[in-house]
Length: 350
Image (cartoon, one colour):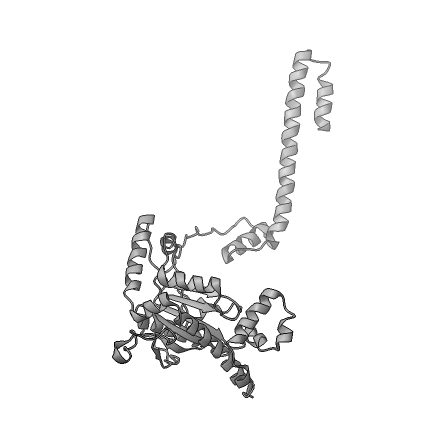
């Protein structure tokens, strides 16, 4: 810039004002260009210092950066990157909403053909996969999820506990849309939970209704405290715990000394009371008599992951009493079958 200034001063007395202005403009442009070149050279020098410390992406880039840092003229040629094919999720794939709906309709048709025993067997197999460490976690593809926008058709309804250690779908290794889940502390029936189960039975046409308790249930344990203790809780919680307490045989439980046995007996007793309340619902028992529905209790053991099924109500209507009379209003209109126990043997072929 100083040289340009001196040149301009030297020409000041030798040229006309117009020529002087043109020369001054040319000198200014040249100076700006020289400044830009100097700035670019400085930036390149700074970048050459930074390149070796940047995180490389592959071995070829490491070699290229080191060559530049050494000032070597032989920079290795990098191979063009090969784009890998994207991995699509395993599952049904489609291209339109109509295809998604058609596929969902097909799945629903297959689900409706299953019997309550088929559905219970699937639950047992899923639980066996879970506790033996072979869970598949059957997540749906994006198109299958789109198909569920318009409808749901679960085969099972489960009334379970709100306990964070008892995630229903995971315990049975089921996916989206497979289970209609109602969770409340102590897995107890009240207006909302009963209404939810009635909706599942009459509108969603589930084949199995399960009431599932679990090991170390805090609600059942708290319900066994003296009434004076329960009255110190907030009113809603007090009512809920007293409702559980009413269904327990506290005197019989006091004779059980083993802690785990006491816990299991209390929880299973509570489950049986809720199942029996379901058995008094005329609409639900109508489905049971028509062999469209099974009502059953379950106990989930957190320590092992195993679910034990018991207290099953299923089958046709009971045989008529003497003289062809129907069962009285006080007589339960259901047939209870013995516990099927747990499916402890994992069968991969199924």
